[in-house]
Length: 99
Image (cartoon, rainbow, N blue to C red):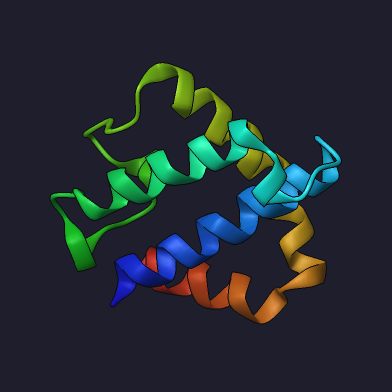
């Protein structure tokens, strides 16, 4: 299921951000854990389900402004780093979401 894959990628990116920027493991970082819980909840309630594209291209903004800004920071940090740490996962994700 695409939503489940999306949740795993989001968790990975938030974890990378937590370790790289906040210098904490995800399980020790309450702010990032809250963001992860919120992101998983929003993904679970996505009206597009498996036909979902990137959230940044969506006409519906599911995230509250505070969480949307934090997620942008996470994506800006973790996105480029995934190219080196998880290239296959990144390219699969980009390919699936662009179709």
